[in-house]
Length: 157
Image (cartoon, rainbow, N blue to C red; front, side, top):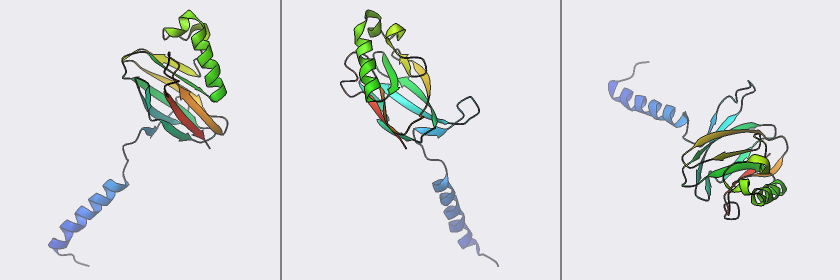
């Protein structure tokens, strides 16, 4: 079969557009290795003053996610992973002691597996495996931030 030249140009453009439409989209989540060979997903999270972006994510039970936090705000922010009860306990712990308010986890915070604290302008990572289905949150427990709504809703299916 022989194509005429006028038909080849529109055909080439259509193929190029189809290829672009099927390519990667620009989202906050990308496939990546979590470093232990089991695979995983990386989610970029922007921390601003009293705000996380994205505000909600969905993960699968058993999925390991590496959160890459960038604190673009003017003050320290932290990120703690847990259900509503764990968030309430962590909030109380952060408000108990003097060292809990300065961005250091110390004795009043969570283990490195559950939380990270970043000063303004800093970037850090937190890797977490979502073992059980249900609703969790990533909350910031610097003074007033959690109460102001600085949290990410995590739906584990």
